[in-house]
Image 1 (cartoon, rainbow, N blue to C red):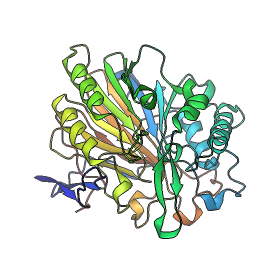
Image 2 (image 1 turned 45 degrees about the vertical axis):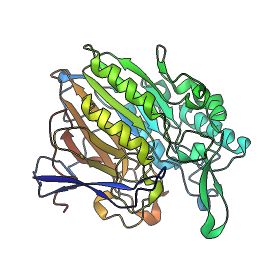
Image 3 (image 1 turned 90 degrees about the horizontal axis):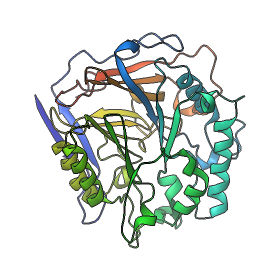
Image 4 (image 1 turned 90 degrees about the vertical axis):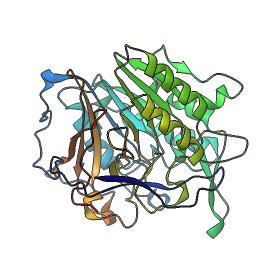
Length: 387
């Protein structure tokens, strides 16, 4: 078995490297794809064996050309997909402890504070609307972090358009601070602490969560930035803590991806080059991300940390994705009593041209990937048969 990392774009100093995981010649058949739909509220995992579970997803915002669609509102959310996802998560058994929404809840990409706060306020109203879904009263704690659409704005015109950081975080905090975990949380200190309010960590039982703002504002106006030194230190502290058995990082942009989006598809290479080795040396199970509009899973080095992407919340698919990647849904993570960590990607097939369509009641949500991502394991390639 040969595993390697392919560098797709040049590693420019201070730039964002487009890194793709690749795994050649390993096509075990233990990954489950396109299985029959499970009844609402049921899973194939024995709830008696689960210590706790959580769900993560990102990227439900619509495109700017679709803001007048009847299937959205001021929230700029893909409402049919969001409603189905929220409703299904509310019925999961065992009930997840957390729902992590890792960015791109709204369209944003505008440095007008009124636009961003207006969209986020409308999104909160959708979330809390009992007639829309039971998620707000489900007992599942929502934790949200910003994505590039909540942190950057679009500058320039035509081919010169580019995303640029602006000081959006105070407006995010104004609207979304209620969707943070209860204290105690570990925060970034120092002179840039106010810019790093959405990078922090906390413990739940024997599990350590590190939340990342992957487009942190900085004076150099570089995208894909996060406080790497603090993250490394936090990983080291968690790795030394004998009470911590599991470590997960959650943020919008991933370290590794396989699409053809280009340089902004991942975090800045300088950040990745610091935090990924620290993840592996401290036995972090996975980085859980979004940004790329697909479900994707890879492992840069055998028996070490995984990269899992659940950016398939309802935003338009990335271009040139094959049909195996064209589904919307969410990913469940099970921390088992025996120490294993299992993931299950749940999805429903909606084709690109109809990404905001009203969902037929009979459209099933099925298991697309079901595998162990426990530390010290190497899972089969997803999708199976991929070269």
